[in-house]
Length: 201
Figure 1: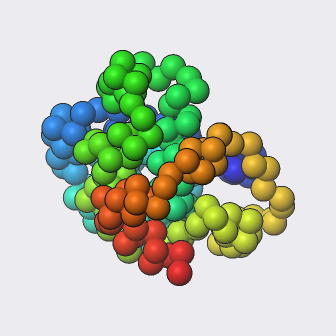
Figure 2: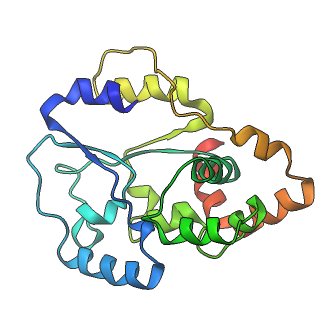
């Protein structure tokens, strides 16, 4: 998806992978407070920002001018997203992230990761101060083929096949979750399921 969008938007494409989630929540909340008052300086008109970032970085006082900003996101079933996140972190070195260092040092199981207070309602954390209702387009990962076509239409792009390159062994992790643990994780992340289910249904 990134490569296709980058080819379409060319010089207007900006990648932002500086996810504030890498900062412990108390310090992150202070930073979000500052961003609400003074967000990242305005970018040129027609800039397309792609990546994993907190939208609040670009939106002053959580007020959106629809003539200037459009918000787009894709959501994934929260348990599947957690398993993919866990598998990804287990596969590499992300020592710049405080939680990854703790997870590796203490050899967390998937259950401990999924039920940790730091991971609780990840979507709600990333959307801090920005209601999901502000988004102009919300796609669902489990329906990515059709939703990618919808996104192409929305962005007035020529429809083309979506190359799927971001894969992990998260299916194996999911296969090991019993019904009781799955129920506990879903209840623990009930806010994220409220967001996800609204668009997935």
